[in-house]
Amino acid sequence: MIDISKYKSDDDLAFCTWLAEHVGVGAVPGSTFFRENVNHLIRLHFAKKEDTLYEALNRLSEINKKWQSTSF
Image 1 (tube, helix red, strand yellow):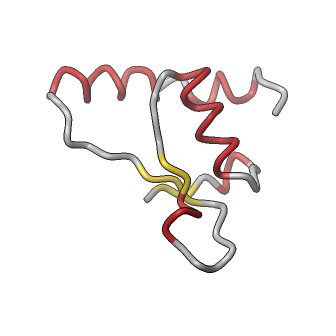
Image 2 (spheres, rainbow, N blue to C red; image 1 turned 120 degrees about the vertical axis):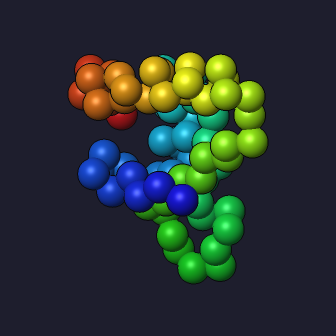
């Protein structure tokens, strides 16, 4: 699980949608794993080929720049 609080988003589902659309990396909203109102976590799954993981890391390295240029 990854804490996305620094992105000032209170909607983990919307953040995961944005991540897929703008960064090209899929994630699962953390709220799907809790009964409580937990919206600051997302889950990434790493059971992929090594090449796929490196590509995801390359894409994620631009997340801060892409987030700042997006009106969310």
